[in-house]
Image 1 (cartoon, rainbow, N blue to C red):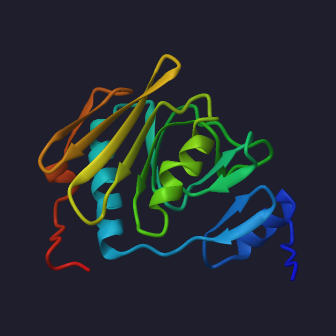
Image 2: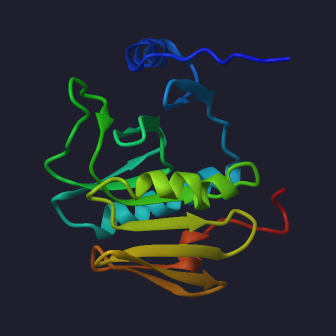
Image 3: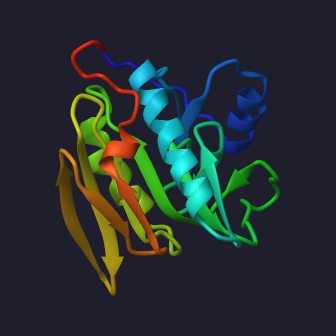
Length: 189
């Protein structure tokens, strides 16, 4: 049996998204609901946001989960967990609520999204000219995957347990002990 999936125009997506009580990704005509986060997920987002907000000087701004990002080459509208943008902010043409110029993107990994975050989503993010740094943060242990762009190559470093992540796009160091502050892996599901 053939199942047809309705394709939506970008205009239809934005019209629906403005009225929606939940966040949805737009992937080349398909609208996909985004799952909610866990307390651990939200704590990691808040911790990273706080660290970056305090450490980054002007002209950088930090955005979290409700800020939409447009990837024109892939026709994707999505909501990364954390993004850092340089000012002036660049918007999707005709919009004042959708940005296009992240330097750093961070995703908190969950069992349902980890594979996509590492592969398809990362490949899509790499189509953004301003994008230089990617953090994948585990929820179930102190573990961060760090990718940064050096010339035309992406360099990978993994940080486990207590370590210091040195961001390459900014003079910022993030201690995993601070990133994972208030998270008790033994007590949280």
